[in-house]
Image (cartoon, rainbow, N blue to C red):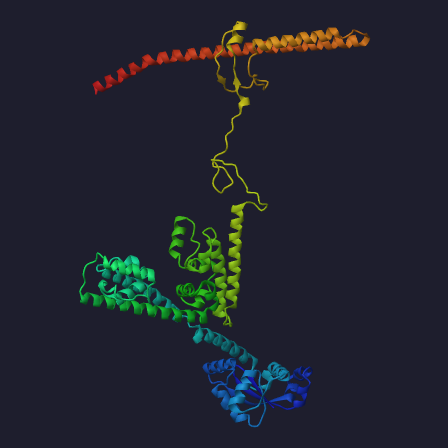
Length: 576
């Protein structure tokens, strides 16, 4: 039995000396514990060295794909006659068996044997040191990964960049040509522009009809519905357009041919772009669609460059001008760029577009990295992320509906209207001002009470707060009127009668006498306080009248001074 072993330096063939030891797979590793014991199990028979890095790269790629390179086939033909070959890959073994008719073996014993050979590789192959093997394996791995990313025909994204650019140019040219057809043929049949709105259908109708006089004879059932067809025929009979010669109609029809051919080529190009996007970036296509994904790749330069960008950059890719303008003017930055045209963002409500675009950009960044650097070719990741985003969109919309309907318990939250409160904010623009009526002292006297007491009338005016005295007390509110005094006198008489009605017995009499004296002292203090209040109020009123008189005198003194000033100004002007 021979063992085929691949190294960064070349292919090696080892001869198995004792095949009986392969029966005990569990104890096979003990045979490779040292170099001497490994030499008793296997022995190097032949070695095919790679001449350069390109040959090593080609051989490695062929082995990864499960096929044998030309150099490997020559090497096996020369050294594997009537021998069974142990290989590490079953696909490679099948390919060798089909082409070279060599029996190949791949089982657990072979894999354990390969592991033992790898552990003692530098001892089994003379002239291959560990210091040489490490840089060779590192260089081959780098060149292999670079080749897979750069030279894979399935990962060529330049075709997508060119296709999306051409598709945008075709849309512009198609729109220009279609508008030219409408304007040109509008001189002959202006009513047709309002009847047929689609540009492609308009070009087909003009090409088929030619002159408007032929409209009544022709059948438009293949291109137009019945209602539009009847409307077109009725309008052709009463059209206000001018007459056109046959030469003009011939040129208009040629322009219609150009429009139809461009539209047909655009449809073919879109199908090509769709197939390339599903091949190169299937997960990105599942998330945002073919056109948006192709525009993102074209804007980033390549799929690999786009994979290096974070989700926040993918979100605003295409809105660079608005971003820098917002940063310069210190306004809010844009929430989306090219990703705005994705179907998920279009389905969202205006309030939730920003949140959905941010989530979609994060998932799109993951999908781009998986498409650019991953080995998988399916769109399972993109479909899974799309389902998550749709669930999040439904969750956001349901939350908005529940907010608008009411609170969680079913009762709507009613807020008191406040004109000073900002919309959607918790604070007030200005602090609320409240009026404190207890701080005012108001004089209120009726004419009846003043006439009965013989006192002077005090004008009814609301006064400002009285300044606190040295003791910190504030003057009380209003003077005592005549009616209030009468009521107090009646209360005094009642208390006196109650005191006299109580019997005078022993100790009770002394207690009652002491209590009566205390009550009398309190009454005297009350009378004094009331009289002092009346005096203070009368003094305040007199002071107010004196201030008014002083103001009047001051105004009278200022009035004669004014004409004197005017005379002085006139004199100065005359002197000048």
